[in-house]
Amino acid sequence: EGGKEIIMPQLLWGVSVKVNLPYRAGIVPNPLYSPVAAKYLLTNWLSRIGLWSQSTIDMLNFVRDCRTFPDNNSMEGFIKHQKYGNSTLSEDLKDFPSYISKQWYNSVGDGKLFAEQCDSAPHVVERRRKKVTSVKTKKEDDDCGEMMWKKTPGSIRGKLKDQKDKMLRALDAGMSLGDFEYTEKNSTVMCRILQRHASTLDMNFMGVDTFRVWFKGERRNALKNHWVNIIDNFHDKYVGK
Image 1 (cartoon, rainbow, N blue to C red):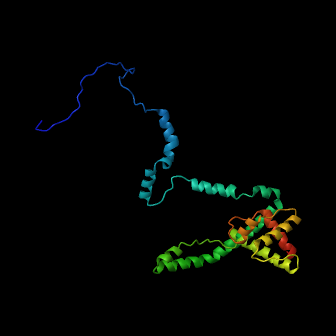
Image 2: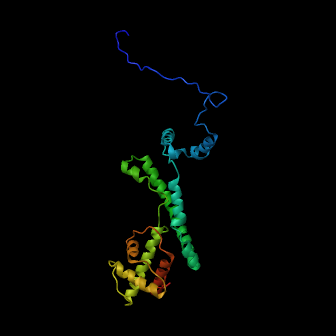
Image 3: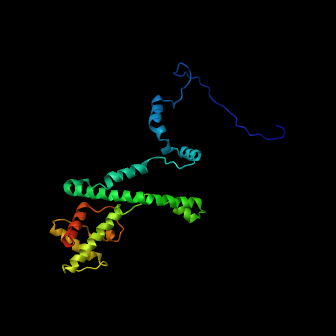
């Protein structure tokens, strides 16, 4: 045709058969149509679209100019850890008087923390105001992200340090009485001294490895209640209440 060769498929032979469909309308309905499946999708999957459609998350981030997480697993994990990972319920039920004492010390620490934060808040705000009105460098921009409510001696780290200082004061007093000898460079010896004292109270103190992590300031969780009781008793014995 027009000097061009055209290649086309051709039906060479076939069979034509008339089939009666088992439907009154004479048509085959959509095989994917299912009210049950539609209800399942609406109630179970469309409300969780972020789990299976990243394009929806991308569009939402673009429109709102923000970062949207597809689920709240990270928050649920944090809440679960706070409720169960750091729970001392079993220990508190075994020694309820110590629990009351611990809660009292916590309330005092929280009060000190709040008071120090209130005192420091005006200075933090003023420092940030000066940074905003001045010519900022990149480093200054980073420093401006400092948390106003920063950790103070009322926090877990502060309490860990206070307990360490209390133990060292008691160790110094005990060594001056000639009950034992130690150096701060030898954490094993210090731990053994506390373990021997704990045995006189029919209690168990922490192991050497755990002690070393705490003594170096690398521990992030609070000490167990009975460890704190041992340190307090050790301090009362050599330093006094």
